[in-house]
Amino acid sequence: MASALVDVRDPGLDRPLLWTVALLALAGLVIVTSASLQIAETRLDSPFHYGLRHGIYLLASVGLGVFVYCCVPLTLLEKLRFAMLPVALVALVMVFIPGLGREVNGSTRWIALPGLTIQASEIVKLCFVLYLAGYIAQHKAALESGWKAFLLPLGVLAALTFMLLLQPDFGAVVVLGIAAMGMLFLAGVPTLRFLIIGLAVVALGAVVALAEPYRVARLMSFTDPWADQYGAGYQLTQSLIAFGRGHWLGVGLGNSVQKLFYLPEAHTDFVFAVLAEEWGLVGTLAMIVGFAVLGWRLFVIGRGLEQRGFLYHAYLVYGTALVLCAQAFINVGVNMGVLPTKGLTLPFVSYGGSSLLICSVMIALVLRASTEQSRLQARGRSKR
Image (tube, rainbow, N blue to C red):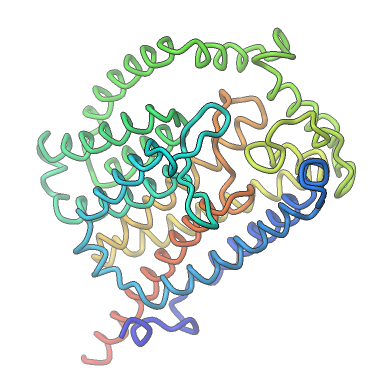
């Protein structure tokens, strides 16, 4: 039934969005392979280990995306919107279960399943967007007029934030907060409420930052990384060196020096710095333009859906745009030294199966939303 409603050859399919995502993902495969050659050869005696795994993840993501696009109607997801919250909470709890939770670099963010390790925050991002899109579609008028409808989703966000900070995963908290506030702002919530909530969040953020010494150290290293270039500022200084070596056209694919164990997480969090070194200013601008086009297409699709009265579809698309654009902006900003260091991947580009899978599902749902409204409108015109 679902495949009958939406066909991959449907004229309503947003091909500019699809091509943009495909190009970003292919560029990611190339740069991840290049960035991980030495570390894979040293650790695993197989230089293409991470590149091959990333390619497998990419193929699995395409398969999952096609399945979601063809077989998951958004009307069903809208009905199941409240079921998304238990799924998110279960994922967050699972990381603390012995034998399931996996600690990486001092943070317990991963769920170890047979053959796959999933980052819990990726599941939470998708589930929260699906929940909030349905909530806005149902309570849009109340959100514009009263506080009660506005505070309920913020309470849900606070509960998820608390669980994420226990891991800790501060980067995911920031992305979720941006997505939630952005979706509610687009829903017509008065600006004064955001100002009040914003002041409260800033005060709470200051308390959270001061509660753990490493958070203060990260902030201090962000303002002056060279003051402690072999300690708290090490990651950022090595990233900046990579950017400096790139010049206009880069040192050439595969010729990065910073990936030779100077730059930590070269194929994940700091893959953009390796890209800057190997592809230069031209390559970095091309990648930034790619994400700008991605965000533009998503907001155009969302706006068109909202104008046609597909509120759930529209806010699902808006939420996807905010999550992907916020994460890309933060990752690029961290790599360039304009934002404090956060453990966030670059969507479609960084190494990581769970990130690719969830991002693929989000894009598939956006494409589904676009083609569903196109088909339904065509049916309405044919009846007239």
